[in-house]
Image (cartoon, rainbow, N blue to C red):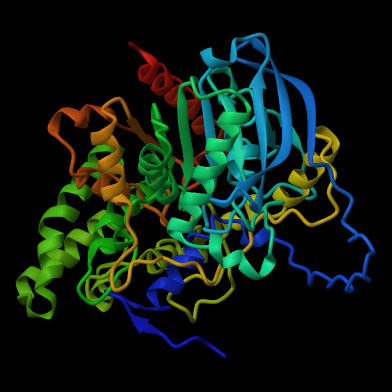
Length: 519
């Protein structure tokens, strides 16, 4: 039975929050394997409870060559407890830490990394972007690899610049609540920030790393988590960050959820659509000749005249409507009649379905460079995301094998690559979830905190201008604007699946870390 459809500032779509939860599942749904977990029989009185085969901690060593230099490291896969105020354990958090050997610990930065979802493990920032090994994908990130997958040394790991700790939030990976009936205590914006913050505090304490420079790197919903953590760590634990890295993220949900009166999603998506249309050679000759010019023109129109057109709604004059149709056709590569039929609301889904319809192709949501065929032209939105074919078949197999064969961490329970969290508590009442004020407060309280936003211009799920708008809206003094940095890439949400972008990302983050540590 189809879910009832709702108008959300554009074409008919799924209800806004449902749509966003689906979109921010971090492209991992396709390779998540779900199985009903058998219920354990009640233990007999005085009989010890049987537990699965497990390793509470496993330490191995390894080496990876980055920039022609061998980096020797110690890898620890382990769990740490989340403690209640009374000192009792409420959850265990699985993580993997890579620490370079032969260097005084406090001289090395440490970066805490996670994906988003909410409900995603850290598998992709771990085995896709930053870790010393990476999933073996085609270099261009466009072609589906043959299952079951595997991994190769990651010559673009950032382990040469910083030690790394990959965190699986509670209810993902091997991380669990002590009492399964109380797992909802961790499933919410603030609940999650507090739990991850407690993990970071305890890891720094046990590893004697309080004097190390500290960074956070979060992807997608990890921007919400990271922005919130920047403030929470400072106010609750007096842990001050040197830098926050956000990959394809968001700080404010209202940039992505359209409503009758909220046109922001249409506005922030337009420059990305122009970049994608340029990639597929669908723009007029003058824009096709200069990608930067095309994106700049699209951004100027989106936040200027287009915003005014949308505010006028159905009262717009015929002349202005016709001009808007022509301009949107120029910037998106879509036929004018299609834009007119959509009442000037060009949603990402409609764009993905229609841009290459003459070729029978639809575009990926997370990386619109990727194309595929869904075999159904009766719909105005794609029924598949072709990008899932690129990443979907091998992540779970690669991670499970890597944990056991390389990191020597044994556990019989399933590793939850992605575990959807339908009851996630956004806790905002009648408003959009946002950590914009949290990040602004953290930057004002710590003027050394720097922010780097990595933006993929083929990302139609969290398009770059969603983050650029949020950063412009940060209520910080003018002198702190110099602490905000951005870097852009041709690929999409997971820009690191495109090897040239992965190489550039290493250079961008390395320069950012060096800048943060410069006295």
